[in-house]
Image 1 (spheres, rainbow, N blue to C red):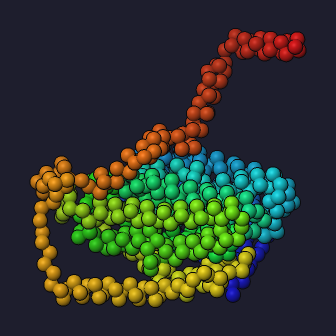
Image 2 (image 1 turned 60 degrees about the horizontal axis):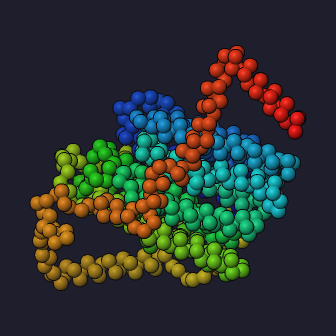
Image 3 (image 1 turned 135 degrees about the horizontal axis):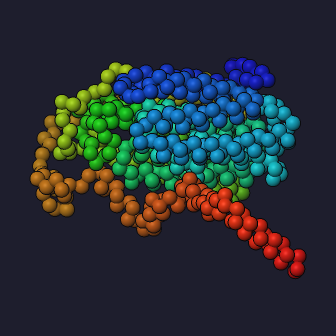
Amino acid sequence: MFKVFSYPWFRLDPLNGFIAAAIILFSILIPLYSFRFMQGRKNLGQYYLYIFLTGIASLGAVLANNLVLLLACWGFLGLTLFLLINMGEHASLAAKKSLIIVGGSDALMLLGIGIIYYLAQTMQMDLIKIEANNGLAIFAYACLAIGCFAKAGAMPFHSWIPDCAQNAPLPVVAYLPASLDKLLGIYLLARLSLNLFIMNTAMNTLLMIIGAFTIIAAVMMALVQHNMKRLLGYHAISQVGYMVLGIGTGNPIGIAGGIFHMLNNTLYKSCLFLSAGNVEYRAKTSELDELGGLSKFMPLTYICCLIASLSISGIPPFNGFASKWLIYQGLINQSGAGGWGLRLVGIFCLVAAMFGSGLTLASFMKLLHAVFLSQREIPLKSKEIKEVPFSMWFPTAILAFICVVFGVFAFSLPLKYFIFPAVSTYQPVSRDILLGNWSPVLVTALICVGLVFGFLFFKLSRVNLRQDSNFTGGENTEFAAETNVTGTQFYNTIQEMGFLPRIYKMAGAGVFDIYEQAKKIFSLSRLLQHLHNGVLPTYLAWMLLGMVGIFIFFLK
């Protein structure tokens, strides 16, 4: 049994122990990957210094047992996030947006911590246990939860992640939005919900609704993206919904699923971003319409991307299925423990989570086809397209390998040694409370047997496959590339279904972007800036109008 080491300023327990280990892993793999990817760029000394400081501050935030120390490390990470994103060639606006959204949520966290100190009279986290039965306590929880949502990328504080994914250097995206920010944001949300506050049904239900909405809304945006990095950015948001949903169930198995999915997401999402980096490194583009047929030139990258794609889509026997299955179990347990209203919410969230997995699979079928499998007449010289160097494919392969191991041996490795002990610190949990008997090793063996028999049957049957011209709508498109419908064009039809065109139009206009809406509100300050021009007659006029207003008020 893992012992808890608690001190006034630091605490090491089963929950933050494996998260700290994951931070160290990514702090090793990302610099290794960056060695070749970032080669030749300016200010590399500053880049590696920022990476190192980010890792140290992340460990400080995770191991902190004092709210002041937590806030100091958390705020410092906002600064390094800005600096690292800004190292992209055209990333200044994305860096500014990230700093404002994350920094603004840090201000709310400061307010929430002040309220917690007022209610608990201590800053030591393991001594705080606040019952959320009054408006002040709920407001304090909301302030800190907003900080978690902004860091992890849950809606509506998500809009900085796609911009960061598209414009920041790929190793930075794999290190922060894909891994460390998810670990920190969901860790703190779990710590708030399990340790610092005693949650009630209404708060858990709200978390579930936020999680379900984040899953569906983000994956719908991912479906219509034409840029590989931006597509992965929206999926990084969508997966946060599963984590919030699992924690929101309030029962041990759902919470275990949410925390396990947090860990799994960092693995396959970083693997996907590093795969995108490999593609961009060789093909010099990340636009899906300009890519195709790379599987024969970059087989290792293709295999790693395939494994990570199946993992994020929840396909057995990979790790994404194991954590999503636990979340489904938690939703079923939660929906059967309350009244009709709570049951309806549980059923709605369960359907949303499963539907989101289906849409995720559809989205990655698009990505795999467009990047690796499609036969396209594109001006890519085959001599220039080849597998990336060892220092780039090795970190990607390590992450893909862990995705397989954590799926096949889910109960004997990650759940047994990391996840169940972490949740058991606050709530008792074990494999015995699962609703069904599922053996990932047996499932893997049956899948492998099925694949082997299918391959042998195909070879022994000597089936002759006829090759013919391509047809679309009855028209021969072999010599008409302009009429060839690509995977990205096929998915564009989603934007024309039912009420979706209006929603996509609003999304494109920034209606759902909290940053863009805040800019409109703060644009009113420009009027005041214009009026405060330093000219004495202007201030005298303001004083006169103020006096007139006072006289009118008292005359009434």
